[in-house]
Amino acid sequence: MPKRFEITRRDLLRTTAGAVFLAPLLRLRELEAQSAMPKRLVLMFTPDSHPPEWWPTGSGSNFELQEPLADFKGLESHMLFLRRLDHAWTFDNHHEAGMAQLFTGARFINDSTRHANGPSIDQILLKETDIRGGTPIASIHLCAADRGLADKRHVISYSGPGQPMAHNPDPNKAFKEIFSGVTFGMAPAPAPNPSPTTPNPATDVAREVNRRIHQVNTAELKSMQRLLGQLEREKLERHVEALFELEQRIASMPGDTGEGGAGGPVAVGGVCEQVDTSGYNNSLNNATTITRWAQIQADIIVNAFTCDRTRVADYSFSFSGGHHEGLLGFSQSWHDLVAHVSKTNDSVSVGGVAMSTRQAFIKFDRFWAGHLAYLAKRLASIQEGDGTMLDNTIMVWGVESGTNHNHSPRDMQYLVIGGKNLGVNVGKYINNSTAQSSNKLLTAIMNAFGHPATGIGIEPNCGPLSDFFA
Figure 1 (cartoon, helix red, strand yellow):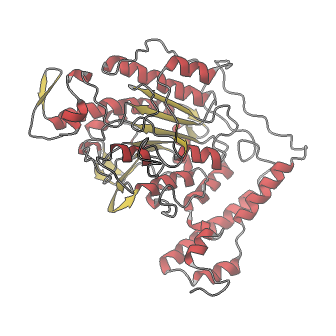
Figure 2 (cartoon, one colour; figure 1 turned 180 degrees about the vertical axis):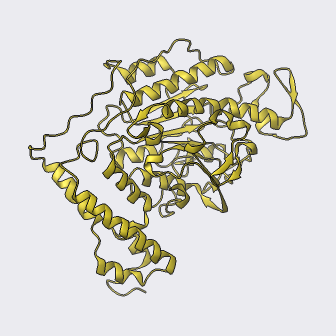
Figure 3 (tube, one colour; figure 1 turned 30 degrees about the horizontal axis):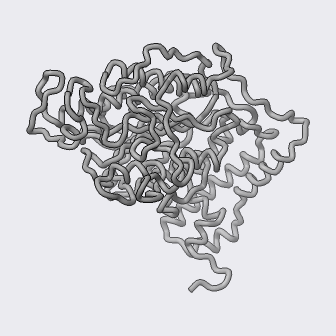
């Protein structure tokens, strides 16, 4: 039993001093002190998991993409693969359990709707951080090759327990809702900052809170060191050193920070352009029209960013267990007879060509992956500050089941794209030696945006995934 006023390890991790273990938060604060770039988040989903070939060959920074991700060629330095992440719980064939916890870490709210019993990371960040940055729309939720239903197998974003954020499948409606009143053809006007000569009590309070958050009492830290092991002490020393340096930077920052952070308004990259929505067709099994549909939705997301209408998006395809009979020349259910099987020694006909179900699965998987690659490449092509819009955006791609559609919570396939300026350890394939909770990844993402979360969903104290950060 700890004595009165004695601090336990758990207490330590709950204190401001304990927060120094959240290296991502420190990294973010350093970036904020150096840059006024906006921070963005895109959650993404494609159906029916991925074949084993979705994982790269090689390891570390020396990896090579295989056929399912061939359209991401050239973006390797922006990608972070994290293998051996497991979901925290499962139910039945994991199709619904996987969707519920994909970005929430939560269980079902009940057995009837099977919606998630908690908010997803995008909505948590909108509530707990300044990611919105004064933009007129909190978040946008778009889909292609789906009807935009709020059913448990179709949604990946939740505003709260049992509160799904339904997708908008219609690009024309989405365009009108997102860009109403926008003048195209120019860079977005930054939100005005208060005059430096005008007293701003709210800003003064915010700066004082920021200063106190980073104050560390040396005597207190020394007394706490006895509670830690050697490795933890070394981490503490490194992070405290960074913390002191950061405190000095914050103290020397000029004026108030306004919406954009250090020194003034944010500088949004690109030009605010009108999106061409022609050619939209809502067929669920025509590859050509789905590709056009997906391109329009991706262009809407990009221009919602360049017009600074929002900084949070959800981009989804199909649904958990999607069938798409007739797509790519396969007349039967892609889920039931391809992804569900995925063998190398059998044969099916796809577009009149005989191939194994594994080869067919790779073809199916690449089709969906290509649409996400299009969005990533568009963001990477837009200069923003000293880098690109992709450097200031974390894209997180998840699926509902483990590798090779194994109907289990094991070896989930998450891919992080972008976020270099938020401290993401991009350009790496990390194959963990032991399984870790996917909730650690979700926690790390929240930390990268400045939210000092210690966990999420049913694992409120799981901590962040250390390999997520550079």
